[in-house]
Amino acid sequence: ECWFSVLTRRRLTNTPFKTVKELRLTIDTWIEHWNDDPTPFIWKKTANEILDSVNRARTTLKTVVTKTQTNH
Image 1 (cartoon, rainbow, N blue to C red):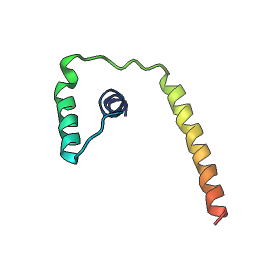
Image 2: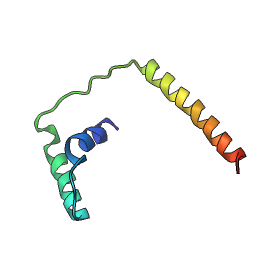
Image 3: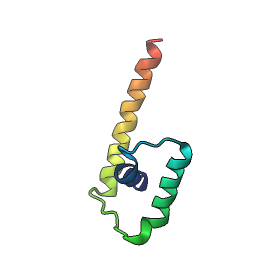
């Protein structure tokens, strides 16, 4: 997910593509040059903090889904 985030922010955001072929070429070029200037990902949170966040999100999602289902 981090890699896709970097690709999106650095190369795809605010770039108009006229064709799918043009988009694919841009992504392919990005992939070819990804390791030219490598930068390691530095995690800001511990694994436990990330897992806690995931669990909170799952709990919230279940609540939203349940409310949505009961309203129909």
